[in-house]
Image (cartoon, rainbow, N blue to C red; front, side):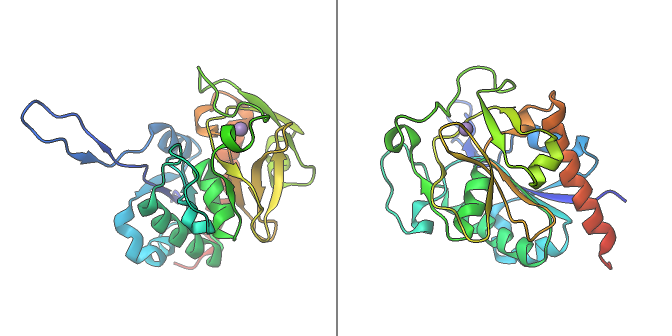
Length: 248
Ligand code: MN
């Protein structure tokens, strides 16, 4: 029986309707996320903000949790005001995903947190974010690459002995980069396990869990590279072990 991975829904958008018909909001999720989970052998199950009142029930019925990219984490969650108009908070997703995270952490369900998810993992543990890298760290690398999302925008250096290092099997990894925010002060019990040359945290792990991994880049867009495919394979393997180890 395949394992089930809860995948959070992306941000809603307004469909452009025909003239005279009002635009209607659509829930949306980049197909790459679903493909990445399915190709690794698990069933992706989309979890929308309507599940917020029942996140513990949802987490009791999934074997793994994947948080995906999207709009910004509301700075109110780490005690700051919005820095400038580049910051585009998504409070509905914050509420859903913070509750899912808390439940998944307490049930020790494997977690893969991508981009916004990686940042949210840090905030959930009491950490803070750079709200806008070009404003607050103007001398850093460019983290909003232009052009092909399937190709690398920068290199990350991976810490030896980390889960990430075991998965990708090297100390350097070419990754894409599509973020204007990033981890600033580290959350509790999180280990930074990848950094770019400007010192930015590009991966986080909780070493006390079997699989709690945040990555700032988008591995779901780099499935043509074996090391990025390996991330989903390792995640789904941990998810399958979780599914097999539970009494149902
Ligand atoms: Mn980056």
